[in-house]
Length: 333
Figure 1 (cartoon, rainbow, N blue to C red):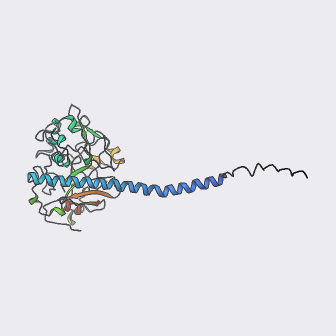
Figure 2: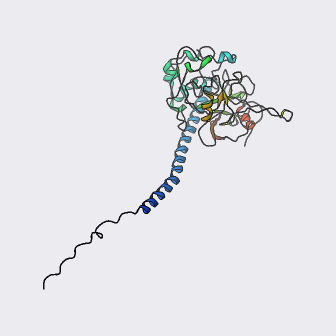
Figure 3: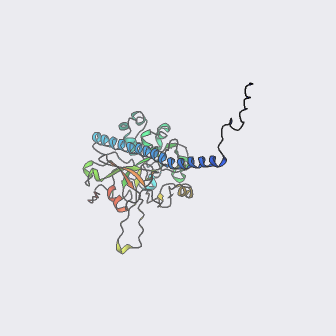
């Protein structure tokens, strides 16, 4: 009997089954949902790491200032000389180097420190030193690497020669009011003795965060310069009383919508859009807010080295009492 003829395989059964369009769309939708759920978690983890790095920088600056005080019997001086605002606004006359320059040897920057003459005006310092950006002064969340302030862009407070000033993210709390007030903070013109901090080191804010704007005519973040907004914070707190109901409190709490008052504020509209509002119309009342891109507030270090997160919602009075080191009022919560 002849063998049975083999049946040819079906063309359909031999081909792999492909996804239908509907199935493919469902898979894409599921992947998209999973990514949308995962991405915020990844971003939050990255920000937590960056925020931790910023806190570590603050701890190093606090420790460096303690070491400076141990050597010099005073905390580092602000660098801003006791002059009129008109003189202080002139880079080539009134401004010495900031408190951050003084502590460079304590943050492993002795070579950079040796380039400075802390007795001279800030504009007299070498160009390379002015443009430096030590890593400990940079918060990864803001990432100011490469950002500079150009003296030629400062208008009436500039000079006829261009020098670039590197930007950073940390500033000392100079006062809860204006620089000419007695509500003084941890840094002063000549350097504060620890004995003068009568409210206690653990209750007195020393240094906080600020943002460095990308505009090279904006002085905020220029760490060598001892101006509010550059390496100092002066929040312009005003007491409110029942018989002065019409009085406006200008206090600049963390990330405040109230504009920073600077010696120079280029393009105020653009500054507003980037949540760094400013103006330069009241140069006798220079003031600024601590600022960061961390959600909800800024990091701050106390004179005892403790670092904590300061909420955007803190009351002006509570912040002012933490800044003033000898007002006799202590907030412990």
